[in-house]
Amino acid sequence: MSVAATEEPVRTMPPAAAQAPKTPFLRMDNVSRHFGSLKAVDGVSFEMHAGEMRAVIGPNGAGKTTFFNLISGLLPPTSGQVIFEGENITEQPIVKRVAKGIIRTFQITEILPDLSVFENIRVGVETAEKLNSKPWISRSARAAVNDRVAELMKIVNLTGKANRTVGELAHGDQRVVEVAVALSGRPRLLLLDEPTAGMGDTETDHMVDLIRRLHQDQNMSILFIEHDMDIVFGIAQHITVLDQGRVLADGTPDAISNDPKVRAAYLGSIE
Image (cartoon, rainbow, N blue to C red; front, side, top):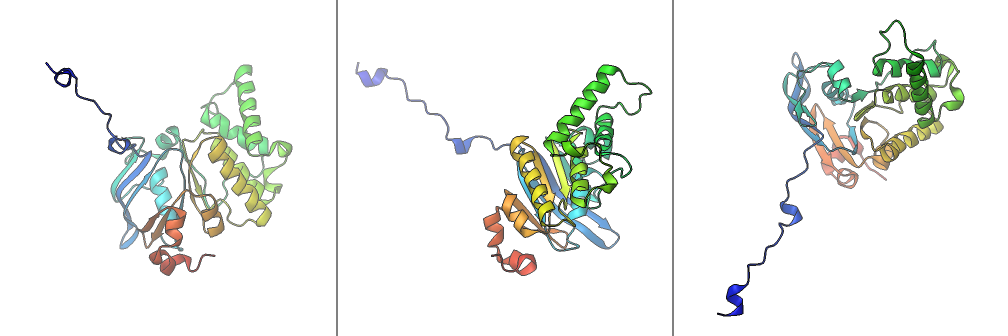
């Protein structure tokens, strides 16, 4: 008998490309939101993977904030589905989505202006830990809350302003306080709606640095709306362009900047 006849066939592993694709962290399937005859969001499909830094851009009235409202649960869709970590959350209210880690900020700063920086963040931490409805908190629980507040102030670089009344702070610092409060909920997906709106150059630089650090150091999944194209193309890994409630383009910054449809509808010439 020949040697060749006794040899077993060589077994090869399937190529990497044949492996199952990674399940999207967030998925929207043909989602629409209509207000009467107005189609604010019209048949949008969208996918985002965990750990991504993604931007949503588009002209005024493109449907960006409505898009965020559909993800966060502030509005129910007229049609379509929202899937988060493989679960259909289309019918779930805001409180359940927050519990899953979908947390957002708004265009208009949401703070308690008469309280200090520390107190604002403490309210967020107590709410996240379900302590704010209790008539009495133990000493150990209070210490844990204070430690968490201190940790968050360090992350957003507000430690030196802990006792400042938030209403007296500059607009940029107020926005940072709002981000810190959002972080108190331990977001798995952080939605930032125009985080640098109304800021000067220095404040904008500080906010962009914070967003970049949250993504890189905290490994946070971030989806943000922004009108400043320098910011968008400076930090976003992937960009979705909305126009008249529909997805006009979706891709890397290079692909978006060179897309003729995007240039014609929104960006113009990008230097």
